Image (cartoon, rainbow, N blue to C red):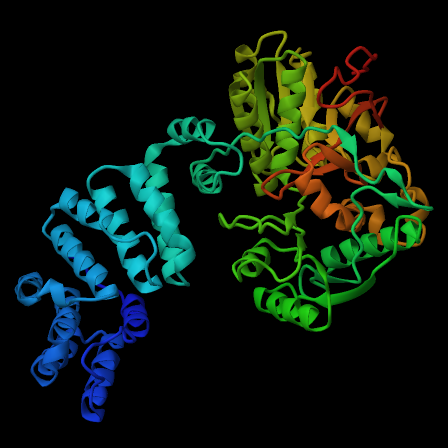
Length: 594
């Protein structure tokens, strides 16, 4: 038997207590009784509340059916379906008005559901108006979700819970999301992947399918970005020149964690943002004022910084950096001003129409490597990945993308922590790989230096692609000879292949942080600034792009910043860029040393 939650009871009380009445308002004593009934409902004492509503039936005959309906709802909430039915039979539906009619039909549906008559419940729900007050809409969608699931219609239940999601607040919202993902989990990986292929880009179900697949150890394949025309072309406008797509802002609020455990990351992004700001000068257009806000690395700190930036006049926000903070910000509804979030939300919250999400996700590197192999006609691969989260996520993305493109992953091997001998893993994977296959590695540099020579000793001469973890800005040709022939995607700025940016070798003299892992975050910060004036143009002009420190950048219809990296290869212990991109033969005709 279904029981109303306390939260739902509060919603009912707040949302329905203002229903219009006929024949004059209640007396002060009756108003006090109504208030007492509402308090009892919020406390979950539905039986006591029902008694008060029934006492009002005789006191206010003109509102008798309205109060009977209240009492019937409370009886059902207290798991008394027979009493509920008896009261409903006493109600003259011709004397119901406004939302009471919908409440009556909804209660009849809930009764049918409690009796296991799911088709009847669904039929009654279909009679309800599409637009209802929030408390009634919540009850309707919850009933639809429960009855559809109980009758075996998983996708109808999913649709109802998706419709319910924006109506709820935590903790009810989180519980609904968990139930939605559990429903999708029942469909299984192949069923979810098939359903995803039937949906157009931007369909709101896709993010939920993506989350469900992650829980099942898989993920959605990515749509590769298309690059047609660069943004920022100089155009004549009267006697002046204007950059196409450029939008001026008066003040940018930069929201970053400048204290706490992630302060180093926040400062690297900040420094990159400011470096690009000063490098741009005034040639790219009027420069905005920059105000920097410390989010302290917390959700609460992010929301405080967000509202402070709004109060102080920001007309564009860049940040926050942490995924839970992006969730919290986007959960506020569509931001009052555009936002370039520096990460993706953890939940299925879509990017608001005036905003975008920019992130250096480990999954992207797996996608790039899969496309690299596919574009070179390679349709078989084996995977080696470290056990850390970053490597595992890249490996899962590689497999999803490779198989979606018609490839087959023959074996997946996890490199054990602390081991230096991978011969057994290689031997187990090797028989599954054809001579024209490929090998994918997602592992930190130290493990890759151990793994690659052992692969070659095992006489596997297939092309090896890896994630950027194999490349350190601290070059060590002596040790990196073990990586010769390995191809990987990375940031153009690390190889000085993107003009118009401050050279890394020059900057690292003054900024020690970018000599190591901070270099990629510094480049990320530079691109956050470079993207800012073109956000609206890129999102509304598919295929337009800018050249950035992290790659060529475009924004898809869902607000995701898509990135095309450069390709590099180790030869004689030195990583250098190779010709081509994801759509070409990426330098395979060049000599490689092993």
